[in-house]
Length: 591
Image (tube, rainbow, N blue to C red; front, top):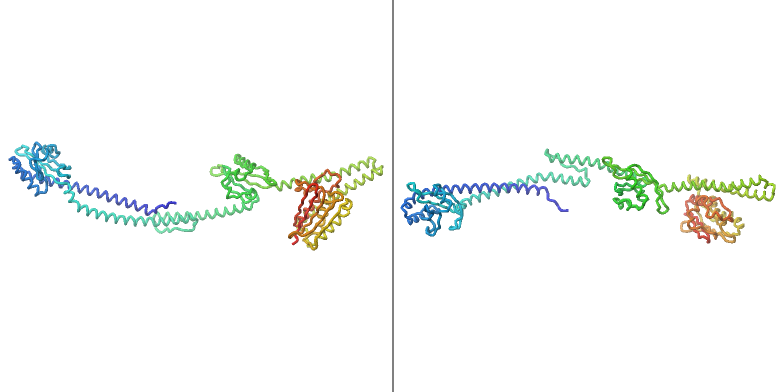
């Protein structure tokens, strides 16, 4: 940045220029007047000399003694230090004090001579080619008995006249230089006195601009600069109060925006992002500093969001909509936009608030599915029981074989209803205890829990001719609720038996992996398709409902497993390949 000159060096040159112009003008006026005065005095002197010379030369000229007249002119001219020229009425030079009259040209055309011939005193100043210098000429008519007998012209060099003024010019130049120096010194002093408080105010203004609003200028004195300093101090005090208030309001706003779980976008009228909050940064994977000033379609490449913002800006009023954004697992956003207005109620942008309702929508879907699934699962056995009861009432009871078969089926369906209800109650109890923190965890032997769960399933495995292999690492302890963990393992082993082919095997292992205790149940069953692995822990969800040879469960076993593992602050994982079997793993902290 180019450095600008100080005010001192702006004022002082102007002052100095005014002084120089004033002195120069005075010099010109005085010298011009002196030269005019000297010229007039010289003309008057030459007139007086011409009168005296005419008295002396008149008799000689009247006698037409040109030689005597010329000698007399040379003598007198030397004494009075002026050139004397005698000219006849015809313009012929009769005598001259400095030149040979016979060699001189006709003078009848000279202005001063023409004027003298008319009876007046002729005065003229011009360059003389004879003497090679500027001359002042005064021509006086010479008459005798009312007859014009000639003209006496006396001249003097201008340089000689100007030379007499040189001492005056020297004195004037010295005096002028002294005046200029004194005036320049005074101007410099005055400029510095004016510049000092202005420089102080400049420094104060710079400190104000840097944010030092508590600095105060010196207000000594009673002039306008003191009033200006007092006004600047008052302005700084008001700015300090306003900046402090704005900073507090900004901090409050930042705290509110940062604490909001909703994403906030401030958009201008051109769909450019002005600011966002942390929730928006996390939601869309952006940084405020990088997206500020960019159009929303460029910064956040989500078409539905861009369309919503355009709609909100066009509407000019509160707009609400639900946006479904396909991003990873997908987002469902409740979008609200309110117009921002500036001076004159003119719309300058919009405030967009986005609330992530994905989980709420998911829970609503799960609730709807749960109600539908419960209704369906309960309706099946009830319908079967009603059907067989109708048949018994219609006479099948008199057929012992049919009656026995129908009653066995009714008993099975009743057991299924009881199982579903018991599992629902178990699931609700686990969730309730987990939310209240009532699930008591005690450090226990995982191997013993696994052995107990497997023992409870051995009869079922024997019926299906499935071998159960247990491999437990000794000394494997963790914080557990033995009853809940045993129930979870039983559900996994039960599923492995039901979905395994007869003659196959199920392996149950318990070992330590890093800082965790791992319980794995592996089968050689039909496996689970990859696209369904994310849903198998949903309530009443069954991978394949068409396999009639597999006795259906309640559909709540795996949800119970997940709730139990969550209550133990662990995790459950599954790997499966269709046709090759599945492996369910429970990981608990063994620390």
